[in-house]
Amino acid sequence: MQLGNAAHICAAASGGPRYDLSQSTEDRSSIENGIWLCPDCASLIDKSGGKDFSVSLLHCWKKTSEKRARAELTAGSSSEIVWKTKLQFVCYLNVPRLSMLAGANGISVDIGELNSGYLHNLGFELNRVMLAFERVIKHVDILSLPLEKVLEANDDLIGLTVSFNERFRTKNGVDVPQRTSVPKAISTDWKKCPHIYHKLQSIKFVLPYDPRWVTTSTAFTQFRSGHAMFGGLATIKEVDTATKTIIASPMIMGLPQTPAMAMFDEAFKK
Image 1 (spheres, one colour):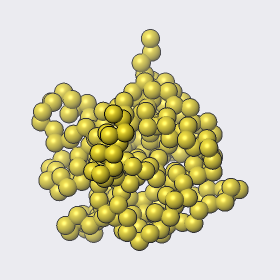
Image 2 (cartoon, one colour):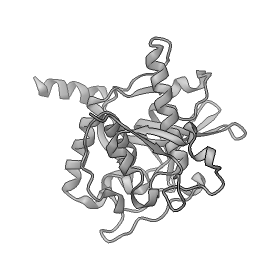
Image 3 (cartoon, helix red, strand yellow):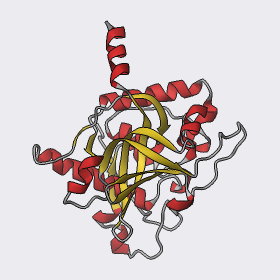
Image 4 (cartoon, helix red, strand yellow):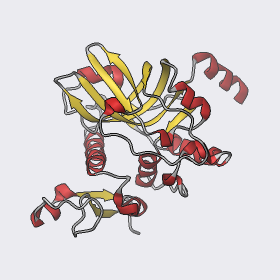
């Protein structure tokens, strides 16, 4: 039984996904240019010329996976914990990242043609997608470092999965898209992107997000509300020591479940 595929981050041949003309032949065949994926994900990252999976994103996944493996080999020495936060309302699902997580854990998720439009435009079909990824989150132990512990971390933060449950400031929120709207390219400058941020002492924790993965009209409103509570997971992709800014890519975001709501759910189950 095949458990995985060795895939190129930058294509080995001209015209391939993420091909880098500046690489030497040795660079293209090096272990640094390789990533180990499940068969489904190895195919997924190369679709549409690899435009939805950048070089930096794949390096981030690789680093995260290697760090998790090292943590498992040295169990007990890591400050990362399994994420167990429950969300009362999911407002953001990063479909490519969650699909990779599912595939890496042997879980098949049918996402159809989601990469071509907004989640919001799926209508009732969105329920199926959200339930599918809810099963992924419930069945996979995701190691993460609580946001308040980030300042204590001594290791390189790039690629680290962070969990959060904080009040964020919203910035550059977009209007609810029309059914016929075509997603626009996201700026590489996070200051111009839709994003939320939280001040962690002297550090600014910023989460730029792609409007394609905002779930509902209510969620779009929440991202334009000025201030809002958000819980979820994100992967750190950049640390700017000069401006004391940490940029992270959100995996899932939503309204954290309150203690009262949790008690209601437990009572309802009984």
